[in-house]
Image (cartoon, rainbow, N blue to C red; front, side):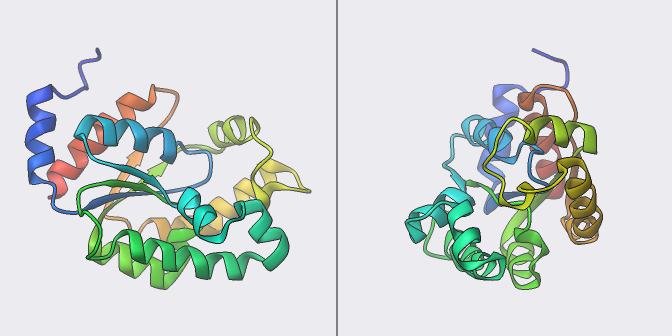
Length: 190
């Protein structure tokens, strides 16, 4: 294991201090779901993917919601689902991966900043293009040049992501290394 990783005892110490949900925000393709699963596993807490919860609540895929009702309707549903997931009725200690646009919504952003340890995972456009090119399930990328769309979205969303108190740069390192970086940053932030 790399020298940047935490020991089991250090991870357990952080887990005991954790009194809220760790929420991962950032662009599509940055690795929120994959890193989130590893992070939750390290902490022995539940992992929740907001998009999967939205699909379960709507009985439709994210792509179908976008196609049938549009982005505004999707964002409204997303906000309600995220509010439920970070609300008082759910276990506080968990990891939640949000969709790329969730943190752009001012109400969702305010809720997350108030009730969670919000982590912005960031990476460069080349890595995003490489990763999202593997799937055809991204509604915002359909019918256009992924690099151009991602570049525009990143420029539009970065000012919102900057509100997150924790900022982690991921790159080509293994997702487990990014998860350890997040743990160290959350520990410092708590």
